[in-house]
Image (cartoon, rainbow, N blue to C red; front, side):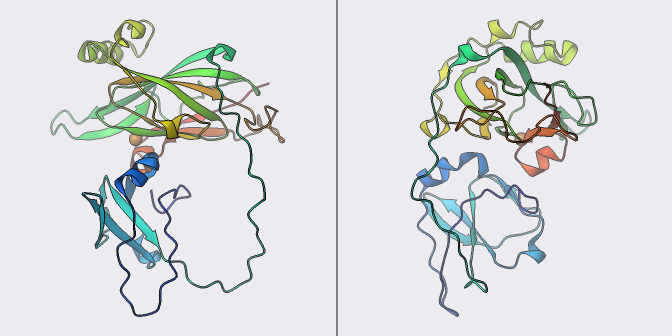
Length: 279
Ligand SMILES: [Cu+2]
């Protein structure tokens, strides 16, 4: 996830004395789980980022590792060494932080959409070739066209073998539940043929055990982890959730927005779709 704007990894600020070797940062497995959607990282721009250090999480201990271009796996943590400021910082932490209305009501939703995550494999090697949302490319016309101010329910159906941290631009959402898909192979075959969750009886397949949404996910967010083989129900708001009011700008203006997997090489291969708001 390094190299583009989405650099939401754990930030460890360190005022390090020159020449001393830093001890491993005190980062626990529990802390890492709390930034779960951001934990999988892809390092692709190291020559431009000499101050980034990598740590591997083994049994709750962060051990320094050599970062290599193209490195990609779970449970890495990156440390940014922040050097003394060269300019004065006049920013202040506000006395009061924004109050979030964490309460979510599914019945406010005026529309339900199925957001289906597919992975495609090379027939010869079996290796993954690309990932599409709803079987469509980024270049295909927007199919998610919510009204400004709307509340919708998005049923995110993950047919791939991996977790995907789904990220919505502009909108804010809250996962309310996740259910395992039963008869997954049969459902996958039907979806590969029809690409239509309703016609493939998704509600009958989404009958597995309900998985509790972790506490840190039960608030308004713009990234949420979607488990493989599960249907995650998310309430999505296309308004300012802190005030309940409309956006203070024209959210219908071109070129519009996108939603995508927050893992950079998934997004680039092409787990990303346009999001176009209308009045
Ligand atoms: Cu992904």
